[in-house]
Every structure is written in structure tokens, then in C-alpha cells.
Length: 263
Image 1 (tube, one colour):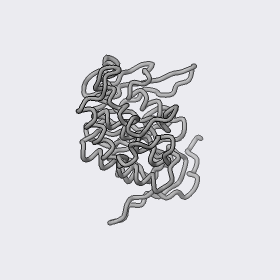
Image 2 (cartoon, one colour):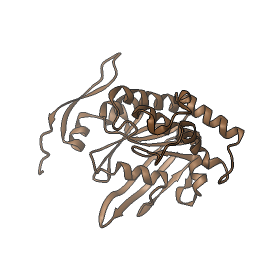
Image 3 (tube, one colour):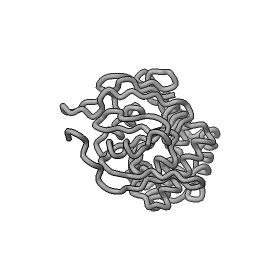
Image 4 (spheres, one colour):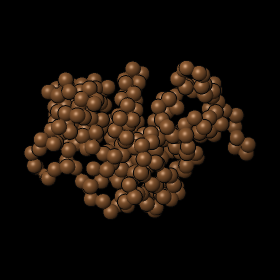
């Protein structure tokens, strides 16, 4: 569904991504993990067409991303940046309706199909009861659900999410990730999400893409990819990945990992 081929990104003489190649199958939920500065956000921006790679290419549904017009791309890919915001007060319903820009002409009023899509997106994210509230007056968890609803209103096939649980407390993190996982399963979405919390990544993602220094360190099924060895290599932390029958998987951190030979 999403193909990244030998993508590099360089800015002001610094390599942010170096030769990244990955194929994301249709209907998978991929978590991108890595330390700060690993290139997670840059990779998502390139996948979304927000940034252009210095070299390499991206294809979505077999089509070159750079050849797609903005509205055409938005009908395929929904992108939710980290900590999205609105400059001034819009109602929740207005914000969600912004997601329909990909399906209508500029300045055209919402069609019945647009309004139905907005209603479905608000219902799916449980924000319909907030429709008349100003988005600036909402809690962090409510705002994240509203911006997710806006992205869903695009009716994309691919959902790209940059740290959708950042700055949320544990309860809202769990709610948002459970919601994303449910929507992914119900709608057959392909989801690629940057995430810091390794326990949440192990619990919710089908596959793990580990980045370090702008390069792919590992990519594969979460159960076999997110290991103590990988965590030590990428994060420099000793850990225990606990998988017990009948219990959700979790990652326990023990301390700093032993330095690598020659480090």
C-alpha cells in the first residue's frame, strides 16, 4: 500500500534520513520507534507528501506520490501532525468539516455526502456531542479526537499519525490508541504511527519500524522485532519484554545497557 524506496533527506548539510526503504502492506498497523532525532517525523512528512525527499521516491497504492495533485493525495492519505492546532476558535463540527476539502471544490458548500462523512467521523471518534463547542475550549484528549475525526473525514486509505498521544495522560493515551486500532480494523485502514512508548507500540501495532540515525534498524512483526536486543541497540537501555499468557505485553526498563564493543 505504501512503498518508500531508498529515501534520503538532507537539510543544511545534515542527513536526517539515509537510504530508507520499507514496504507497508495494505491493512497493517505500523509503529515507528526510535530515539529523538532518529527521523520519525521527517519520514512521516515524506510519506504524507508534506516534504520532498532529497533522493528516492514514495508510492501509494502503486502510484508515485509526487505526481499526485494535493486533493488526489488527500483522498488517499490522511496525515495528523504532532500536536495539531487551530489558530483561532472554530467549532468542533467546523474543524471536522475541514477534512472534506479533498472531496469538494474550493469555497463550495458542504454537500449531503460531505455532511454524512462529517457525521460518521464525529460518531466514530465520539465527538458528536461536542459539535458546537470551540475546539480551543476542549481538553487535550478531546482535541486529539477532534483532529483525528478531521483526518477521518477525508476518508483516506492510509492514516499517518505523528505521536498522537503526546502530552496526554495515560487514560487518554489508552483511549486514543484503542480508538485508532478499532478504526483501523473496522475500515481496513493502513496506519503508520510514530510513537515513543514501547509498551503501547508492542500492544497495539502489527509491525515495528525501528529508526536510528536516519536509517532503518529493523522492520517486521512486533512480536519478533521489538526485543530486548533491539531496545538496547537503538535506545541504549536494558529492558525486559514481558509476554505472559492472558496479559497485555509490556516493556519493563531495567537500566542503561552495557556499552557496545568499540563504543
